[in-house]
Length: 356
Ligand code: NAD
Image (tube, rainbow, N blue to C red):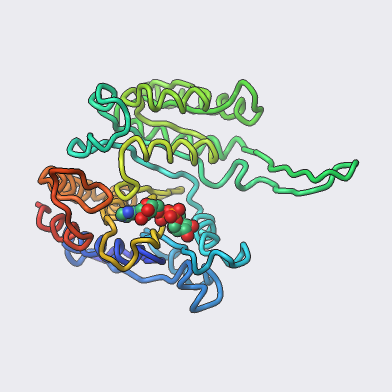
């Protein structure tokens, strides 16, 4: 059997720590099945090659079946010109891999329910939804312009644009995801104001006809931001455009607790995908063995599920994480009184012990 070819971007700060932990967990879960190739990207690539995403790095990712990413960036590179910032590498790799859908689960692990900032009666109803965010269109990729008005005032504009095919393909990702879950899609837009949102709604409704088993709801984004904290248990799959998704997925990450716990997958056509935790490079704790590796380890599990169809192995990793949390073991970011504080590398060891 040929090995699965995975490009690995450790990145900067805590990136290499959480990535090494994840590679070990993956290797222990499916021994001998992966061929990992390390790729330079981010601040470390700027230091070594003068740019955040050298061509050969992108090529390695494009040739791989999946890419696993830690995190990039840090204060050392904050004063670089925009095209030489580590974060440019992130946009470059997403674009180069043609991943247009970001899938971000928001799930409360029962042992961490007390970390949920919502009222107990709301959290107790259970929170388990997925945000499918369009990733390569909308205002972030539209025309950006700073200009002067006729009377000499400074002005600026950013264009929000979506085409039919861009909306169609993300809607399909959402409906397919819902088919494997509770079969509810909530599409979020601002169709009472924005023309691009009216097109969004129209096309989502057309795509919905191909999935008669799935119930489709629509919400305006301002209302959605309230409902997410009022009745989070009612959501199953949320689909929304790039900017709304950016904001709502950060809101969702707070609802379910620590930023160190949450994975994300970015997928395109076919099985290729980019898998990463949602946190950054956390320079404040880098090199101190304090980083929680769970977000990246769960991103590894998502890779098994979405790129390699290894559902049993993905379950194994997710169950191991659950078991370790149930046993009261915590890194600093999720520590509460009465639990046991352990280091990042101890967390990895415990998860490996719980794989069965
Ligand atoms: P951050 O996510 O790195 O850190 C925010 C806070 O959360 C910090 O206090 C940090 O210690 C803590 N934290 C984050 N991940 C953790 C983990 N796994 N375990 C324990 N604690 C954790 O966000 P920031 O401080 O705004 O950004 C730091 C750098 O990361 C910046 O250069 C930023 O541009 C970059 N960044 C990169 C990505 C990415 O690579 N995808 C995403 C966001 C930010």
